[in-house]
Length: 297
Image: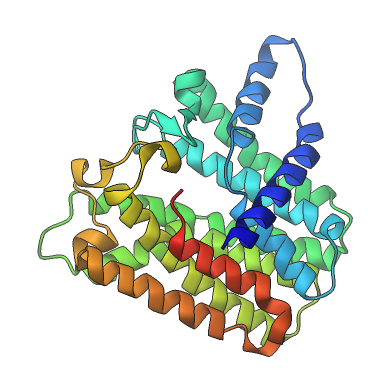
Protein backbone atom coordinates (compact mmCIF):
# COMPACT_ATOMS: atom_id res chain seq x y z
CA UNK A 1 0.00 0.00 0.00
CA UNK A 2 2.91 2.36 0.67
CA UNK A 3 3.99 2.06 -2.98
CA UNK A 4 0.62 3.19 -4.34
CA UNK A 5 0.52 6.07 -1.84
CA UNK A 6 3.93 7.24 -3.08
CA UNK A 7 2.78 6.86 -6.68
CA UNK A 8 -0.41 8.84 -6.02
CA UNK A 9 1.53 11.58 -4.23
CA UNK A 10 4.12 11.82 -7.01
CA UNK A 11 1.40 11.97 -9.64
CA UNK A 12 -0.57 14.61 -7.71
CA UNK A 13 2.50 16.85 -7.39
CA UNK A 14 3.21 16.73 -11.12
CA UNK A 15 -0.46 17.07 -12.07
CA UNK A 16 -0.85 20.12 -9.81
CA UNK A 17 2.17 21.77 -11.40
CA UNK A 18 0.76 21.12 -14.87
CA UNK A 19 -2.73 22.49 -14.19
CA UNK A 20 -1.42 25.67 -12.52
CA UNK A 21 -0.75 27.44 -15.87
CA UNK A 22 -4.37 26.83 -16.90
CA UNK A 23 -5.41 29.61 -14.50
CA UNK A 24 -4.52 33.12 -15.68
CA UNK A 25 -3.91 35.57 -12.82
CA UNK A 26 -5.46 39.02 -13.06
CA UNK A 27 -6.27 41.98 -10.81
CA UNK A 28 -9.51 42.77 -12.63
CA UNK A 29 -12.61 42.51 -10.40
CA UNK A 30 -14.21 39.81 -12.54
CA UNK A 31 -11.12 37.64 -12.04
CA UNK A 32 -12.32 36.87 -8.52
CA UNK A 33 -14.19 33.92 -10.00
CA UNK A 34 -10.94 32.56 -11.49
CA UNK A 35 -9.30 32.89 -8.06
CA UNK A 36 -12.16 30.87 -6.57
CA UNK A 37 -11.80 28.25 -9.31
CA UNK A 38 -8.05 28.05 -8.68
CA UNK A 39 -8.59 27.78 -4.93
CA UNK A 40 -11.06 24.94 -5.29
CA UNK A 41 -9.01 22.87 -7.73
CA UNK A 42 -5.65 23.36 -6.04
CA UNK A 43 -6.62 23.07 -2.37
CA UNK A 44 -5.54 19.43 -2.11
CA UNK A 45 -7.16 16.17 -3.07
CA UNK A 46 -5.96 12.70 -3.98
CA UNK A 47 -6.28 13.29 -7.78
CA UNK A 48 -7.79 9.81 -7.99
CA UNK A 49 -9.82 10.49 -11.15
CA UNK A 50 -7.01 12.00 -13.24
CA UNK A 51 -4.70 9.27 -11.96
CA UNK A 52 -7.15 6.68 -13.28
CA UNK A 53 -7.33 8.41 -16.66
CA UNK A 54 -3.56 8.41 -16.99
CA UNK A 55 -3.08 4.87 -15.67
CA UNK A 56 -5.68 3.39 -18.01
CA UNK A 57 -4.15 5.23 -20.96
CA UNK A 58 -0.67 4.07 -19.90
CA UNK A 59 -1.89 0.47 -19.67
CA UNK A 60 -2.64 0.75 -23.39
CA UNK A 61 0.63 2.41 -24.35
CA UNK A 62 -0.27 6.13 -24.20
CA UNK A 63 1.90 8.52 -22.19
CA UNK A 64 1.01 11.09 -19.55
CA UNK A 65 1.14 14.05 -21.93
CA UNK A 66 -1.46 12.53 -24.23
CA UNK A 67 -3.78 11.68 -21.35
CA UNK A 68 -3.33 15.01 -19.53
CA UNK A 69 -6.12 17.05 -21.23
CA UNK A 70 -8.70 14.34 -20.52
CA UNK A 71 -7.44 14.05 -16.94
CA UNK A 72 -7.44 17.83 -16.33
CA UNK A 73 -10.92 18.34 -17.77
CA UNK A 74 -12.30 15.58 -15.55
CA UNK A 75 -10.68 17.02 -12.41
CA UNK A 76 -12.09 20.46 -13.19
CA UNK A 77 -15.57 19.02 -13.63
CA UNK A 78 -15.21 17.00 -10.44
CA UNK A 79 -14.11 20.12 -8.55
CA UNK A 80 -17.17 22.01 -9.81
CA UNK A 81 -19.38 19.27 -8.41
CA UNK A 82 -17.69 19.52 -5.00
CA UNK A 83 -18.16 23.30 -4.86
CA UNK A 84 -21.88 22.96 -5.56
CA UNK A 85 -22.24 19.91 -3.30
CA UNK A 86 -20.88 21.94 -0.36
CA UNK A 87 -23.30 24.87 -0.81
CA UNK A 88 -25.88 25.66 1.91
CA UNK A 89 -28.71 24.49 -0.36
CA UNK A 90 -27.01 21.08 -0.77
CA UNK A 91 -24.80 19.52 1.94
CA UNK A 92 -24.04 22.86 3.67
CA UNK A 93 -20.46 21.93 4.49
CA UNK A 94 -17.74 24.17 5.91
CA UNK A 95 -14.72 21.96 5.18
CA UNK A 96 -13.36 20.38 2.02
CA UNK A 97 -9.95 18.70 1.94
CA UNK A 98 -9.25 20.18 5.37
CA UNK A 99 -9.79 23.78 4.24
CA UNK A 100 -12.77 26.14 4.15
CA UNK A 101 -15.18 25.28 1.34
CA UNK A 102 -15.34 27.67 -1.60
CA UNK A 103 -18.44 29.54 -0.38
CA UNK A 104 -16.78 30.00 3.02
CA UNK A 105 -13.45 31.16 1.60
CA UNK A 106 -15.18 33.54 -0.85
CA UNK A 107 -18.97 33.87 -0.78
CA UNK A 108 -21.96 31.88 -1.98
CA UNK A 109 -22.50 33.74 -5.25
CA UNK A 110 -18.82 33.50 -6.21
CA UNK A 111 -18.83 29.78 -5.36
CA UNK A 112 -21.78 29.17 -7.69
CA UNK A 113 -20.01 31.03 -10.50
CA UNK A 114 -16.72 29.25 -9.79
CA UNK A 115 -18.48 25.91 -10.13
CA UNK A 116 -20.11 27.02 -13.37
CA UNK A 117 -16.73 28.26 -14.59
CA UNK A 118 -14.98 24.95 -13.93
CA UNK A 119 -17.80 23.00 -15.59
CA UNK A 120 -17.57 25.00 -18.80
CA UNK A 121 -13.76 25.11 -18.71
CA UNK A 122 -13.70 21.29 -18.55
CA UNK A 123 -15.32 21.04 -21.97
CA UNK A 124 -13.17 23.86 -23.38
CA UNK A 125 -10.04 21.91 -22.44
CA UNK A 126 -11.33 18.83 -24.25
CA UNK A 127 -12.34 20.85 -27.29
CA UNK A 128 -8.84 22.39 -27.52
CA UNK A 129 -6.94 19.16 -26.85
CA UNK A 130 -4.57 17.67 -29.40
CA UNK A 131 -6.85 14.72 -30.08
CA UNK A 132 -8.46 13.58 -33.29
CA UNK A 133 -11.95 14.94 -33.91
CA UNK A 134 -13.35 11.46 -33.34
CA UNK A 135 -11.75 11.16 -29.90
CA UNK A 136 -12.85 14.70 -28.95
CA UNK A 137 -16.45 13.96 -29.83
CA UNK A 138 -16.39 10.65 -27.93
CA UNK A 139 -14.89 12.23 -24.81
CA UNK A 140 -17.14 15.31 -24.82
CA UNK A 141 -20.26 13.23 -25.44
CA UNK A 142 -19.37 10.67 -22.79
CA UNK A 143 -18.42 13.27 -20.16
CA UNK A 144 -21.65 15.22 -20.71
CA UNK A 145 -23.62 12.00 -20.22
CA UNK A 146 -21.74 10.90 -17.10
CA UNK A 147 -22.03 14.35 -15.51
CA UNK A 148 -25.57 15.07 -16.65
CA UNK A 149 -29.17 14.93 -15.51
CA UNK A 150 -30.14 11.72 -17.30
CA UNK A 151 -28.69 8.91 -15.17
CA UNK A 152 -25.52 10.94 -14.60
CA UNK A 153 -23.93 12.74 -11.66
CA UNK A 154 -26.61 15.44 -11.45
CA UNK A 155 -29.30 12.74 -11.28
CA UNK A 156 -27.36 11.17 -8.43
CA UNK A 157 -27.21 14.45 -6.53
CA UNK A 158 -30.95 14.95 -7.01
CA UNK A 159 -31.65 11.42 -5.81
CA UNK A 160 -29.35 12.01 -2.83
CA UNK A 161 -31.45 15.03 -1.83
CA UNK A 162 -34.63 13.02 -2.29
CA UNK A 163 -33.28 10.23 -0.09
CA UNK A 164 -32.98 12.60 2.89
CA UNK A 165 -36.78 12.60 3.18
CA UNK A 166 -37.54 9.19 1.69
CA UNK A 167 -40.08 6.95 3.38
CA UNK A 168 -38.73 4.34 5.76
CA UNK A 169 -40.53 1.83 3.57
CA UNK A 170 -38.33 2.75 0.61
CA UNK A 171 -36.07 -0.04 -0.66
CA UNK A 172 -32.90 1.23 0.99
CA UNK A 173 -30.48 -1.11 -0.81
CA UNK A 174 -31.81 -0.30 -4.27
CA UNK A 175 -31.95 3.44 -3.62
CA UNK A 176 -28.46 3.81 -2.17
CA UNK A 177 -27.00 1.71 -4.99
CA UNK A 178 -28.64 3.96 -7.60
CA UNK A 179 -27.33 7.07 -5.82
CA UNK A 180 -23.78 5.69 -5.79
CA UNK A 181 -23.89 4.58 -9.42
CA UNK A 182 -24.81 8.07 -10.57
CA UNK A 183 -23.34 10.47 -8.02
CA UNK A 184 -19.95 8.81 -7.49
CA UNK A 185 -19.67 5.93 -9.92
CA UNK A 186 -20.32 7.83 -13.14
CA UNK A 187 -17.19 9.98 -12.98
CA UNK A 188 -14.95 7.13 -11.85
CA UNK A 189 -16.33 5.07 -14.72
CA UNK A 190 -15.66 7.94 -17.10
CA UNK A 191 -12.07 8.22 -15.83
CA UNK A 192 -11.28 4.64 -16.86
CA UNK A 193 -13.23 4.88 -20.11
CA UNK A 194 -11.55 8.16 -21.07
CA UNK A 195 -8.12 6.64 -20.48
CA UNK A 196 -9.15 3.65 -22.56
CA UNK A 197 -10.39 5.87 -25.40
CA UNK A 198 -7.21 7.97 -25.40
CA UNK A 199 -5.17 4.77 -25.38
CA UNK A 200 -7.08 3.20 -28.28
CA UNK A 201 -8.61 0.30 -26.34
CA UNK A 202 -10.41 -2.52 -28.14
CA UNK A 203 -13.88 -3.62 -26.99
CA UNK A 204 -12.63 -6.25 -24.55
CA UNK A 205 -10.18 -3.84 -22.94
CA UNK A 206 -12.83 -1.14 -22.66
CA UNK A 207 -15.30 -3.57 -21.09
CA UNK A 208 -12.70 -4.81 -18.61
CA UNK A 209 -11.80 -1.28 -17.50
CA UNK A 210 -15.47 -0.31 -17.28
CA UNK A 211 -16.20 -3.32 -15.06
CA UNK A 212 -13.21 -2.44 -12.87
CA UNK A 213 -14.39 1.17 -12.58
CA UNK A 214 -17.94 0.25 -11.61
CA UNK A 215 -16.74 -1.98 -8.80
CA UNK A 216 -14.15 0.41 -7.36
CA UNK A 217 -16.73 3.19 -7.62
CA UNK A 218 -19.10 1.36 -5.32
CA UNK A 219 -16.25 0.34 -3.01
CA UNK A 220 -15.11 3.97 -2.89
CA UNK A 221 -18.58 5.16 -1.81
CA UNK A 222 -18.93 2.41 0.80
CA UNK A 223 -15.54 3.39 2.23
CA UNK A 224 -16.63 7.05 2.24
CA UNK A 225 -19.73 6.11 4.22
CA UNK A 226 -17.62 4.09 6.65
CA UNK A 227 -15.16 6.96 7.13
CA UNK A 228 -18.04 9.33 7.91
CA UNK A 229 -18.77 7.11 10.92
CA UNK A 230 -15.32 5.97 12.10
CA UNK A 231 -12.85 8.26 10.29
CA UNK A 232 -10.44 10.85 11.63
CA UNK A 233 -11.68 14.31 10.60
CA UNK A 234 -8.14 15.68 10.28
CA UNK A 235 -7.24 12.90 7.84
CA UNK A 236 -10.55 12.83 5.96
CA UNK A 237 -10.52 16.61 5.56
CA UNK A 238 -14.27 17.20 5.81
CA UNK A 239 -16.94 17.34 8.48
CA UNK A 240 -17.80 13.84 9.74
CA UNK A 241 -21.03 12.33 11.06
CA UNK A 242 -23.05 14.55 8.74
CA UNK A 243 -24.85 11.63 7.11
CA UNK A 244 -26.61 10.68 10.32
CA UNK A 245 -27.30 14.31 11.19
CA UNK A 246 -28.91 14.87 7.78
CA UNK A 247 -30.82 11.57 7.89
CA UNK A 248 -29.05 10.37 4.75
CA UNK A 249 -29.27 6.84 3.47
CA UNK A 250 -25.80 5.31 3.24
CA UNK A 251 -24.39 1.84 2.82
CA UNK A 252 -23.65 1.84 6.55
CA UNK A 253 -27.19 2.84 7.54
CA UNK A 254 -28.63 0.26 5.14
CA UNK A 255 -26.37 -2.69 5.88
CA UNK A 256 -24.53 -1.94 9.11
CA UNK A 257 -20.80 -1.29 9.51
CA UNK A 258 -19.52 -4.88 9.36
CA UNK A 259 -21.53 -5.92 6.32
CA UNK A 260 -20.58 -2.69 4.51
CA UNK A 261 -16.89 -3.48 5.10
CA UNK A 262 -17.36 -7.01 3.73
CA UNK A 263 -19.18 -5.66 0.67
CA UNK A 264 -16.31 -3.28 -0.08
CA UNK A 265 -13.79 -6.12 0.26
CA UNK A 266 -15.74 -8.33 -2.17
CA UNK A 267 -16.06 -5.49 -4.68
CA UNK A 268 -12.33 -4.76 -4.63
CA UNK A 269 -11.48 -8.40 -5.18
CA UNK A 270 -13.93 -8.58 -8.08
CA UNK A 271 -12.53 -5.33 -9.52
CA UNK A 272 -9.03 -6.79 -9.50
CA UNK A 273 -10.30 -9.92 -11.26
CA UNK A 274 -11.84 -7.73 -13.97
CA UNK A 275 -8.32 -6.80 -15.08
CA UNK A 276 -7.26 -10.36 -15.94
CA UNK A 277 -6.87 -9.62 -19.66
CA UNK A 278 -4.05 -7.15 -18.88
CA UNK A 279 -1.97 -9.60 -16.88
CA UNK A 280 0.86 -8.19 -14.79
CA UNK A 281 0.61 -4.78 -16.49
CA UNK A 282 -2.41 -4.00 -14.31
CA UNK A 283 -0.49 -4.13 -11.01
CA UNK A 284 -0.94 -0.39 -10.34
CA UNK A 285 -4.70 -0.49 -10.91
CA UNK A 286 -4.96 -3.54 -8.64
CA UNK A 287 -2.98 -1.74 -5.94
CA UNK A 288 -5.20 1.31 -6.35
CA UNK A 289 -8.29 -0.83 -5.71
CA UNK A 290 -6.68 -2.06 -2.49
CA UNK A 291 -5.92 1.55 -1.50
CA UNK A 292 -9.58 2.50 -2.02
CA UNK A 293 -10.56 -0.24 0.41
CA UNK A 294 -8.00 0.59 3.10
CA UNK A 295 -7.77 4.37 2.78
CA UNK A 296 -8.14 6.60 5.81
CA UNK A 297 -8.67 9.86 3.87
